[in-house]
Image (cartoon, rainbow, N blue to C red; front, side, top):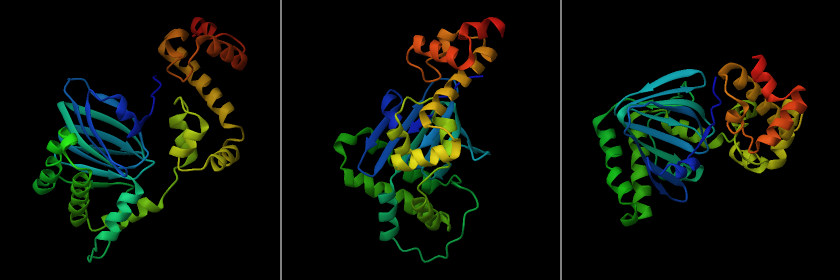
Length: 287
């Protein structure tokens, strides 16, 4: 067993610049991702903005809403904001381009383009696009601009991203409606959200914001759903996870307290004893 710290996208990419080239605009974030080593990169991610992922080289396995997806060279996927996904990147190198789009950008796109073909509803909470030479060329054309962002105007990045959306829309008749629905949907299921976020070192205001709620609505809905305060639930959930890690991994308490969201071992140890009635070292000895 391991505690997986959910990777918040696109915000946390800023802390991994050694593997990513990032361009940030007011309503779009674009990045090129490259992993050159032989090891698989896997984890849990959460999208705070709508995401387009295009695989240039390698293979990407995703699990979204219990559905398993596998993307190969030249394939793409569009996911709405507030998507929680498991990912596994494979390939030496693994290369991809990602776009994170705010509601305003998608609304501007839909307002500026008229789609005469009848819209068809998509049956999944995401849209997958098969490999296509012209579509791949559109994505590949972004790479020189990303790598020379300082010499590229913001407006050109926006135009190129509109071009990507236009290419995707003409290849999938249901996409304009899907895009419209993505903008209309603003909240994630709170239980699912908290089960993936309780380890994050974030205050309640930050958790409320990325869940699509005001702070007051977040607190109210939380207490209605869980029957306790967010602070108490998060603390108890972290302690339960810590106990499971000690029992099933055999790691010492000093090796896992940071992994479950605690910053100070003394505080962790006291909280553990208060909750379970004995010290974490006792759990290790008896497991």
